[in-house]
Every structure is written in C-alpha cells, then in structure tokens.
Length: 161
Image (cartoon, rainbow, N blue to C red):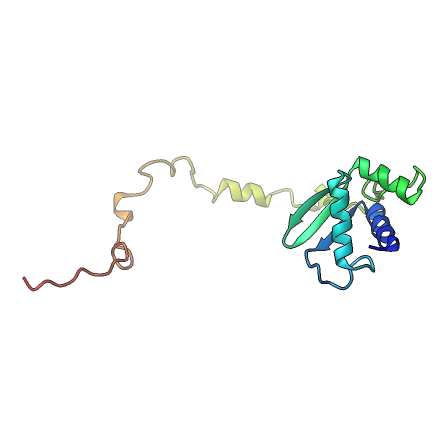
C-alpha cells in the first residue's frame, strides 16, 4: 500500500475519530477517502491489532473508533500538535436559540387536561368497582370453537365399521 494512501486514511480517521467501511474488498474507492476500500480495511485492521482502534461489525460494515493510544500514535505519525483533537472529542457548542422550548402553561385550557381526562375515564365511572375477578356478568363470556377445531391434523379418517 502506498504511503500517500495510508496518510489519507489516517488523516480521515483522525479528523472524525471514527471511520466506516463496507465489507466489499473489490470496491474501487472508499466512500470518504479516495483510496481503494481494500487499503482502508487492511490499514485499520493493522491499527486494530496494535490496539489503536476498536472495531464493530454490523450489516456488512466495519466501524472503527479511535482509542486514546490511537490518537497519540496518529499525532506522532502525522506530526500534529497536541491542540488538534478528533471531532469526537470536541465539545458541541449549543446555542440557546437552537434549543426547543416547551409550551407555555398559560396557553393550555385550565379546565381539562387531556392526559388526566384519559386516565380518570368517563365521568361517573368507577374503575375500581369494575376490576377484579368476576367483574363481568357470567353470561357475557362466550367460549367458541376455534378455526379448524384441533391441532391441524385434519379430520379423522372415516371408518367403515
């Protein structure tokens, strides 16, 4: 594998902190880097054997995550300063305007809360009196035969006796 391919793979891995590759060794190019998919898979398998990445595999895709030792190794290999970190270690800056706000309490009608009305049932209904064994009248329960009437073996053969 040419060194420029290995450097491109390592740069993509260090930039994001993760890398995904399909388990298709005959693909011409990897989706994120412009190197053959075989080179990506084999380079990251090499990093995995040295303990620099963790590997997950699901649905014909490899998922590699950098470990702390892997971050240090790639910093040394790519000659990067310690201030540069993968994007998985960077804090997301959240603005106050992006956060969704809840509804104001004054805008709801004070009389009937939908959840409370659902839980309490119809007005005048007594939930505790209607629950328990024997809550229905004995004539209300019906036991009817099921479809086919058995275990699926068919009807017994007619005998001439």
